[in-house]
Length: 303
Image (cartoon, rainbow, N blue to C red; front, top):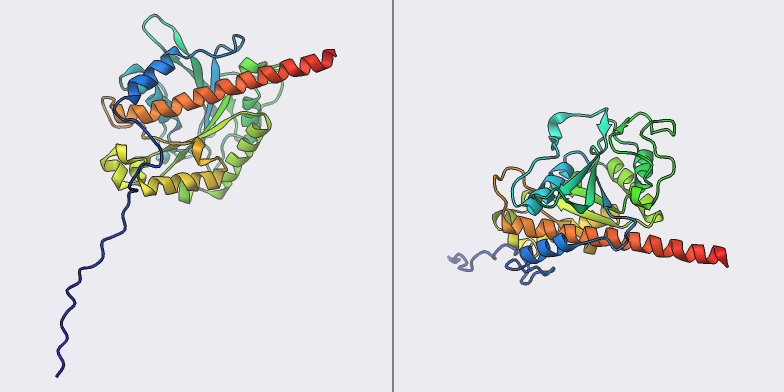
């Protein structure tokens, strides 16, 4: 009788969820203060546009309002809740307000030279018309307008601005996508977001993706947020966001919003402030490019 011995070789270890080296550099020890200093000292390059306008858009429950609260918290050094965040379970909205937030800079009453415009999220059972968002990009919609999912704004609406200038327009479009559910997002919502992106592209407006809920998408990052740029899962999710919306990975910033914390922390702040610095720089570049182009066209017309 032949006796077969059980193999003594152990099972192979599971594949690693982490890269050996970060695929995007970040100095977790020094960057927070450097970022705060840079943002505090920032001034727009064009005097006519003294406030840069940033538009947040994306699906319902992605964390747009929470993103603004997180940016404000990182800048103020304490948890803030100025924008009322909506729950995914609240159902469908039929009256949607356009609200622009200033960010207070210090106790003297001054403000940072950028604002965030927040609109309700896109969802399947009636949401903001893409034509309305296009008009918002062009500066035609004043703050306080209530979006109607059944019809776009008309020129006779008191909130409609007939002749917007560069300072009235949006200077950077920020799409907010949730890392944990981006794979399951409705194709119709993605299609609407791509239409808005194409309109922004035609207007020369820079576009950024903020990828939220990274801790819910990756256990490694949930345990240690500094692993975000060594996480294979987060890189995969960023590539998926890029593929679905068409924005380069270099313009995608993964963050964790504040949502249950009672105090701020350095790691969360660094990711948020790093994204904010890029957004502000992109918006400022756009304004300067538009002014330069207008000057060139004026010279051509006068020749």
